[in-house]
Length: 246
Ligand SMILES: CC(C)(COP(=O)(O)OP(=O)(O)OC[C@H]1O[C@@H](n2cnc3c(N)ncnc32)[C@H](O)[C@@H]1OP(=O)(O)O)[C@@H](O)C(=O)NCCC(=O)NCCS
Image (cartoon, rainbow, N blue to C red; front, side):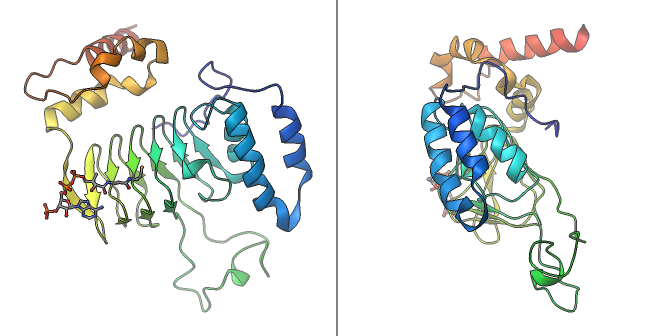
């Protein structure tokens, strides 16, 4: 997935006339009340801007102040200010269950003390955090079940992957894998390998909502993996081929 920041000015994101007021209020809050009030302001913004899947302002603030990039149609705890750490990229169409938390940095296991006083600029003696965070990418159309925890051992959750409720994910998760448990292990893949390949090649999640809606009948029923002939994917693969050969 691209690490280029999402452009929130496309038609799939919405803005409300009241949003600048909420944003001004948000910008004015500082100090210890910020998280509590930001949570309330984000809630209003989500409501006024077409819900969590579409709000442009919440996404802009998350990107600016929390370094969390959330793609279109994605929703859930990734939209809560401060719930996800900096340098997390959430793809498009991602479902994040309640209580999901992700971590992309450990306390320094090899330092004399692991306390943030000795590595967090806003807590103690250092001007710059000496330990870089890695970027965690959460793939398009993945689903993270309730209370899943992703530890810094994981750098990528694959496209279409499922993280079972309560899982503790310590390693990367493959595209279209279902994992669960502590530590999370592969339960199975959602689709056979040839189907996964076509899905990935299609990049269907990049198609506009108008294109996708034409295939709504196909989107709402199980995929027939024996007779693999999904119209949206045929369309998406055709579009991809046209782009790559132009
Ligand atoms: C992971 C999940 C999608 C699997 O669904 P499924 O394919 O129908 O799974 P099954 O119930 O048939 O279980 C298959 C196996 O996985 C195991 N399993 C299922 N969910 C698991 C979980 N969360 N953690 C660990 N193991 C799990 C089952 O015990 C079973 O193991 P077995 O084959 O050894 O008996 C589902 O169990 C789950 O956790 N969903 C998340 C629900 C949720 O959080 N919703 C709220 C957020 S929107």
